[in-house]
View 1: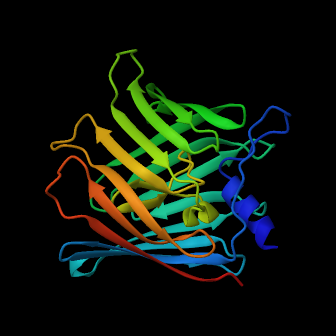
View 2: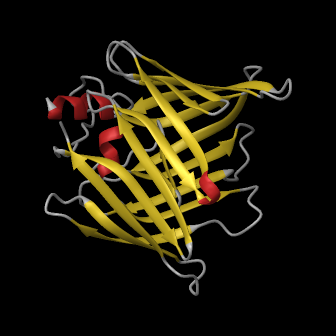
Length: 267
């Protein structure tokens, strides 16, 4: 049953079709659930806690920042066990699937509780050899805003995600890059991704079967240098990380970020 849950839940966002040449993700058969990730950056501590239902499906991510500032993401599933809705404050994300189980569309709806500000953003996904190869982002009015491209390693980990404008300009609005180890990623159980040094989140189009040992994120509108981390791990007997040290390579004099992972046995 543990193996089935891993495949249905983790594969719900990246399920491949039945062609023989399609890529198949190899999820780790572990018997532990990730319960918390604590990041210690100097005197500042950030904690991310994970909650699961009785089927070991992720139902909530709660991130606690200094001064008890808390952000929560809640997850909801359809009768097929697929993630169909995520609620993050005033943002509601819904997911649509092809009859084969492939994720084909993501819709983000935002409505401000304090003003008339409201908008929708849609992303459609295209596949090649069982992996997302292209994304198309649309505005509220249905105009194409951006095209997204992806690169993967031999194990299906996302190596690169590039977001470019729809007008064909040769600029990267967003650029995300990774390199990986060969150990079990505890986030793979829940479709989670590490996007930068402080953010562990559910991301439909970023796939991380293994643990990133290098991570960089840049955005064209950033007002400061983008984060770029090299990451080393300590593992337990099951090959799961229990500690990590993150060094920001753009700022060699900066103190490393220490990370601690905590688990519980899967029921």
